[in-house]
Image (cartoon, rainbow, N blue to C red; front, top):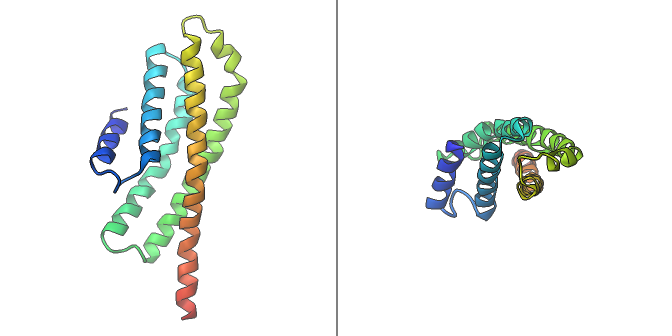
Length: 159
């Protein structure tokens, strides 16, 4: 949670250079989910598959480093883009999607939990679902980015 808040502040102070409204929404939604789930002591398993999505983040950081140090057109960047895209797909699309499917299957059990207000359960379900939609939106951009590196290499070889 502390890292998310730090990153949100970092994005806000550098806005829009480090990220646009989609990044702000992503961070705010995840912080809200953490607070809702922790204060009501629910959803520890979904937190595990949600946080596993951060396994793609180190590659995003490496990508940023390469770009900022003038290595945006290198083989290292192409490899980083590909690995980032694969990690993003595995963790933020496949694993998240499976977890989300399971979460919606269990929604009636969650709604029947007496100590948790139904509004909190619905808020969590909708925020987590919206987060998946955001990941799908990003996936298109990430796939184009990863494939773009290959197209640039092929174009360079032809010339």
